[in-house]
Amino acid sequence: MRKHHPASQPLPSEITPRDRYFSRREVIAGLAAAGMVGAGAPGPAHAAALKHTKNARFSLKEAPNSLEDITSYNNFYEFGTDKADPAARSGKFKPQPWSVTISGEAARTGTFTLEDILKPHALEERIYRLRCVEAWSMVIPWVGFPLGDLLKRFEPSSKARYVAFKTVMRPSEMPGQRFPVLDWPYVEGLRIDEAMHPLALMAVGLYGESLPNQNGAPMRLVVPWKYGFKSIKSIVEIRFTEKAPPTSWNISAPHEYGFYANVNPSVDHPRWSQAQERRIGAGLFAAKQPTLPFNGYADQVASLYSGLDLRRYF
Amino acid sequence: MTAQARPAPKRFRADKPVLFLLCALPLLWLALRAFGVGGLSLGPNPVEALLHALGLWGLRLLLLTLCVRPAAVVLRQPRLMRLRRMAGLFAFAYLVLHFLTWLVLDRGLDLHGIVADIAKRPFITVGFTALVLLLPLAVTSTDKWMRRLGRRWHSLHRLVYAAALLGSLHFLWLVKADWREPAVYIAIYVALMSWRWWKRPVARLIPPTSRESA
Image (cartoon, each protein chain N blue to C red):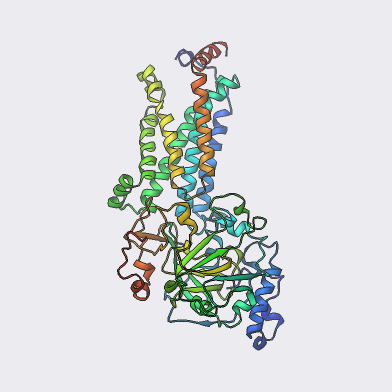
């Protein structure tokens, strides 16, 4: 299960007594250690175990993809545009120390350390399907907490109709940012009711351990009913806004990527069909499988969009 | 034509076997990965890996085929022309495999979807057209067909210029945002075609004269 852990590196559980190791302080310390031990070592080798509970209500019954699949096949253009680039070229990235700036239409704003951001939140595992706009999908056991719980702490005002997110800008650690494939830094956004939806997750780990760099360390969004590019990684800024914030792929190709980007098998990407998806890890001869409206989460989220023309607001 | 009429001396030349091996290497590598030989694999998305590698090597070999005449002229090595057919046929083979991978493994022989894709998706339309253009070139690549078609053979085989352009556009069109690699191929194509444009009369004259002296 933990085959990615090199034998030379002790597990946090081997140093700390099990009961103490599972206290929240240790979780935060584990995150911090993960970043420091990780410098220079590519891949998920420096993951630290996270205390969490399993949220069965919000988890798929499907078997998750292997850790190998999840950490070696990534779209994270900050590290390069090849699927193998994020695993191969994220070794220099330092997810610790980390701070997040909260700004805009809220009572409490300012810059907070990652530890302050995470402190009040109990972590839970949720097994979500991730559907990429490129028509492939994975099943991933994320560890995180509801985004809405985090946002409420900053007491957004009635003017806060949207939430904008920004990825860190570090060309020296993120080689993909040295060429303007996208208009860096990466930005994303949600409508406030989408952000407050219980399915919207702020993830800090996967497979029970802290996020590897290539998956968006130290903290990323997971919005399972939207295409993967909405789930912004390595977040350094959260801003409450009155108007819809700009989003990176929409800036890059507005006719191909909308603000909403809800998974929708009946609205094709202009260059390819979205009716089916290829499940990663299914092998060379596996057939594609049908894509579900809202990536299978229609029962929970379709009501957010009642009355909205999903062909126009794709 | 006269060169082929003259009986060639039976001297072994390594150039063709070497080119054959070089052209077959990517295919061999893909086969090893596909069959999991020695722990190799095509990665988490094997269909995509196969599809992209075959298409990319097809395009590279197609552009290599276009490099042969400029190289023969610039380097004054008319013998290089002997290698062009093999490079071209390998390009065709990779592109047929690319197409079959898409047809069978990616689309699962869903003919309705396939026809819709070719008609609706410009980058697929363009790629498919390029392959269709190459088909008569592969068929007429034999000595027999060259003799039968005579001058018309050369006119027919200019279709390779269109196919290489469409192939490069097919690649450019499918990338999401990072146009750098397709741009390299398009730049090579433009350079090779510009050379042909500027050197047109010279390129026609040099091969026959050097053939006589060889």
